[in-house]
Image (cartoon, rainbow, N blue to C red):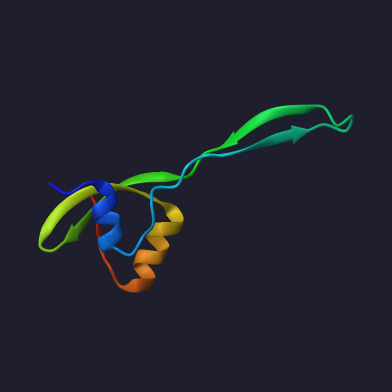
Amino acid sequence: MPSSDQIRAKLGLGPRPKPMFGHNRSHALNATRKISKPNLQNKWVVVDGQRYRIKLTAREMRTLDKKGISLLSG
């Protein structure tokens, strides 16, 4: 069974997105850490006649839709 990175490569996608880190800044410029997590969704996709469940971001789902690669629901 291929890894999710190999399946993503066959779909023309890069590695799975990681959280972004930064700071919240108040009016007094106090810094508190914040994390922006990617919007990951579990989706089924057919690659080489096999069904695989992979985690995709909403942006990647739009990209695959634009490329004409259909995602299976369920």
